[in-house]
Image (cartoon, rainbow, N blue to C red):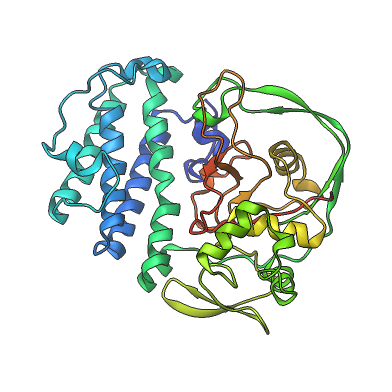
Length: 384
């Protein structure tokens, strides 16, 4: 396997390698993810929603690994099959559905430790050369727990927990680069079978792509400030009807958590009031705000296929991504033979600067409500 040919530390941060991780690498990654969850719980233990998130991650892992009688069938598991009983009698009541955690903290910590121990024992018991079916739920559980990082950070931002700062790497300041042009071509969206393939990426299919110009990096605070200073939040002509209705309902004059945008960006970040550099990628934006900026600037949001091709093929030409999840144009849709999706949602590509690098795969997709602005999202633009 690819994972065996790489240094384990490097492989833990390699998106392609982790999707094909063998037993040994998966074991390391699952421990790494659970230790990180415990670290987040340590700084957010007073927040009921964060406690529920931690419990749900462990519940999901137990539900689909230890309690799944069809675990060896992998993605072909019947989701309607009744699972085995949990090691925690109240697990389903506490963590199966969203809400503020009712579980005592000691029970939660014990459950986090015990479920991981069982998972690692079951992983070690898989065949010496396991196939993708045998490892499917272990890989899926890893990605499920990695995805909690963005949600923990959103809770830390919402409640202003400065203790979360040591868990977050510093944001890298980028030198501005000019937009790039890509020729018309055909591109394969989605992922082919092999290793772990998240449901939104199933399956690979080719689509035509006209020529296009796209930003080399997401839009920074400085150009977004120009939009605000030009009255962007006061002019309905820059907004879709849905976006303008949202703006009036929220009574926004600036993005979420921003205190000041004239004369520099002053914003609340994890319990501190900080001044953001103009070159820093703008974040905590809804789809509506990204779309409005593009209308004001005479640009547009990239389609999914444009974003994916640029992220996959443009690194050598200066395309940068991985600072923020990025909004794309259009609404959520399923790939051929994929599961149904809620077409009211929008699509984000990419990851936040603090998320595990093993999630930073150019084909990864997230379906998010257009009004959601607590997920650290930003955007880049294309020529009309």
